[in-house]
Amino acid sequence: MTDSPETLLALPPGARGSGRVRYGAAMALYHAGRLSPAALEAYRIASAADSRDPGDVLAPLGLARPEPPEADPALHLGALAEEAARYLSALGSPGAAELRRIVARRPACAVPQSQTPPVLFRHLPDALADLARTHKPLADAIAAAAPHLPWRAYDGYEARDIGPVFLAGHAYAPLIGPDAPFPWSEAELGLFLIAPHVLYRDHAHAAAELYAPLTGPHGWRFGPDRPLTLKPAHAPIWNDPDRPHLIKAGPVPFLCLYGWLSDLTAPARVLPATDWDALESLRLDGRP
Image (cartoon, rainbow, N blue to C red; front, side, top):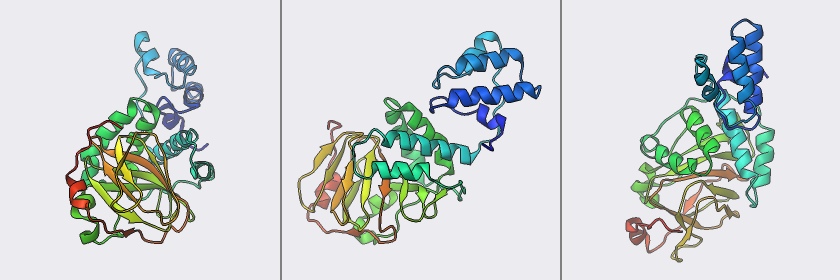
């Protein structure tokens, strides 16, 4: 492990094994004469639970938390990859196991130039607040990694086909894949955000795809002009190659993990339907 003790000491609570790693870093700093015996003992006590914040042990003893180092993008991105794999391990869906294997085999991180579209500023905090109610470690990992991800809008659609509201109301960020922090040529894993009430019109693509929605409810259908079906958060959706699908975001921003497992370079295509105007104006009531 090449991260500095200062970096490892600042690992956020919640990640599996983080308590032990923080204590090991505290021992290294203690032996270097840079941490007091009392502070080392506080980190030992806190290490018994990965979710325990060492600050909760330091403060009653009148000890200040050591100043954190400058943010390490690779550390935050790696922590997100591990939390994503942990989340996928609970999904009984095609593709989840393969994506976990890819996370485990990911290469070294090569942090790309990050981007922050306006939709991210407006809607990611609300999505993460909703996710944190049930999956706080994952929400915290996304919040820490988000500033270092290459967020973008999908540019494979004609604006007249996909609609200007969707173009301005979504962003995605690959974590593993081509042009991602963890380069991988044969698959892609990342995050996808859609603003509240935005319609992602009927479309299809050659890539086999897993959606793992982290917020909800949201509407889905699997063919133009078919009825809409409401789905809750944490109900995975698997799309075989060329399966038509549509997403209607609900009152909470739609945030998901996505995985593409084939045909990464084949563009998606819009499938015309007659009811888009009605679906654009539809407001879901928040009940799955």
